[in-house]
Length: 637
Image (cartoon, rainbow, N blue to C red; front, top):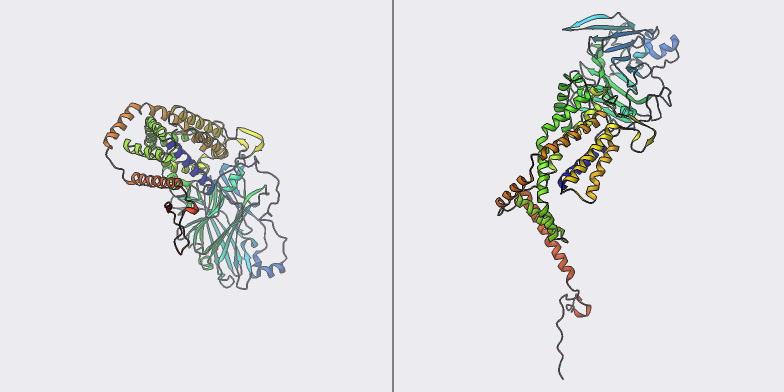
């Protein structure tokens, strides 16, 4: 590994560490292997029923709506291949959602939420100043009716409540093979009893652990929202402090993202008027990993005129599914930001989905993805190898310059830059190709931990490629490693160390001293950094190292030192009288100016300091003349 390649490696490592620290949501392992069955400091159950009130108390509390405040709770379901949605007649609301095609990491049915962990509700103001919640009222469920829209077929369930001379109606529609539930809310003939204040929809969600890594599960759980102005916003995912966002402009949708799954509410008619989103974390709570709360307002006129049309999305956080749900809804899949998101969306994901059409093993798909990326970036890699070969050939001249000016580092640099110019060699050509691969590196850092395609997909000893592999479990926790050791990460580290050793031993221009030590230290550092990352990511880098070793062996057959020397000698003749231009000229001028300043400083330091009694003061000033006095002549007697 020559100096230029090392510079590229260290810059890449530094950028990666900065990215992980400030931009990436880094998952870490939690000591719990499964969700605890006991609760410590858990919040009160959201659907805990208050003590029943008598008719007089209900009348005082609900006024004209008290007639609908007594009844019997009934549960009704709508079901297709994807979802089982349970509704309660108390409030006529969604009470629980089960994803039929998914299970938790621990093999249990995957309930996106249930009556104990979440509550969907709505409240409104009456003309006499009361606040009424739909959960205060009992609705009568009708029989599920078949419904057809175009080629789509499904079922519709309607809840009604007769109150104050009018009627409240809530309707839910679930189409076959869909993760979306249509929802409409309408108040008929209630304009005299319902105030024109906006209605408020609320969704409180105590999120349960569904994945192996409790910390990652928590850090990937958040609330996203999308404005009518097509601007996306979100709460900070990895924060363990309370987070809150208030939005005073229209919104198109809001979504609770549970790592690999989403519960969202989309406005199909007029947008929501405003919204408020909060998240809190109680690290002592062993039942819920995070609490999310969404509040959305709907104009009362829309509800009274039948314009309050919405859709729920209850399903996987999969890009190819979400992109067809609503504008910007695919932003729930975090693919990085800027160029990294672009790389994942338009390069990595299409290639990944193309390969999975023909190959069932995702470990093999990842290996093929490595090969394809290495083939595309081969020209950049080849440029790096060519630069190493040129530096190897020039080593005798560089050593001669060091021997000629052993104590003058500035002169060494000047002569070395002149040599590079004469031979047509760029000192940056070895690290620039490496730096150009950084977008791919950081894009994949976001792709693998967030790709639901890898969830619960096993490969070799890894049970789930979307989280860390842990064949080596420790009875205690180690600093920075936790209570497990990822075997893919260990093998990746060993292959990186071997690659570094091979480069240092076979390349005469290899680094020496501290630089050589750091070249071995960096892979060890990444062992600790990546130990709790997705197994798919560390498997990718292991395969990448093996392919890189193969590339090096093949490239050495094409890069011949004799031919490289001949080319450099030709450049030497060609550039003999050529003056440096551009960056090279500015660099040479800067070095020359620095050398001149250094020479002046040395001359100033060697000049003798005149004695105080050998200087004359200028008359009237007291300032001493710094020039030496002439010796006085002795007067003869």
